[in-house]
Length: 64
Image (cartoon, rainbow, N blue to C red):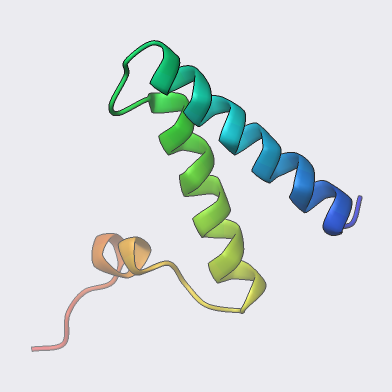
């Protein structure tokens, strides 16, 4: 399946629904919101052919 505007809208709607649920329940740091935000961030970097900065910090050794 290809990523398109319909898929993007569904993902963003899901994110907003998760945020609304968290607000309703008074949850400041909802794990389901954070999970989807992380997936979106990962997709954005990969779609540009870049590596997420957290991966660089975690998996790449610094040159000394």
